[in-house]
Length: 140
Ligand code: MC0
Image (cartoon, rainbow, N blue to C red; front, top):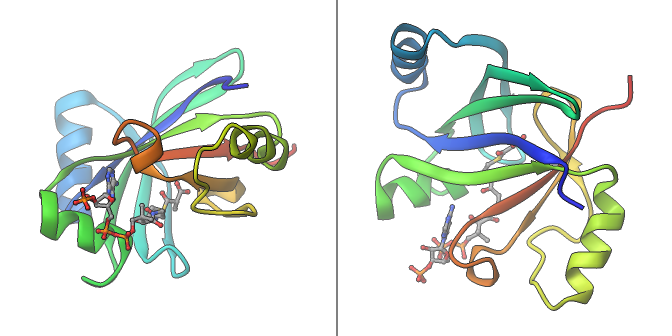
């Protein structure tokens, strides 16, 4: 069901500062920047590698305000890994299969994610403390 690690989402206070860090220390390149009002984030995708199933990225996330998912996470835990996004072929099918196994779905239906992807989150309390995102890449 899980095809690959699509991205690792990292919460930060200052997006531009963290982009500079990942560019200068790891030599990564920003391939996309977006503001996602629905998710309450300003985010950047930095390309890491290409694989058979698609590319993988580091996703840097800055909250649009303190009362967002990432804003609350930063206040409680500070900067660090916020979620893991796994590539799936069909996010609606994957949600149905995972939900049927008793895992709480944060999203019953796919939402709009970075770079045109369809995404949905699974509740971290049912995935061993890891906020888990399913990512269906846009069709080419
Ligand atoms: C919260 N918790 C987490 C967590 N966020 N645990 C692990 N990883 C995280 N990222 C834990 C808290 O510590 C707390 O546990 C419990 O979950 C409830 O948290 P809360 O602070 O009271 O917040 P809630 O319940 O209002 O919301 C938690 C929930 C929310 C996961 C449902 O953050 C959510 O809907 N997340 C999905 C959307 C999201 O994260 N969007 C931003 C990225 P304790 O034990 O302390 O009670 S958007 C994105 O990434 C898009 C753009 C993309 O990839 O394309």
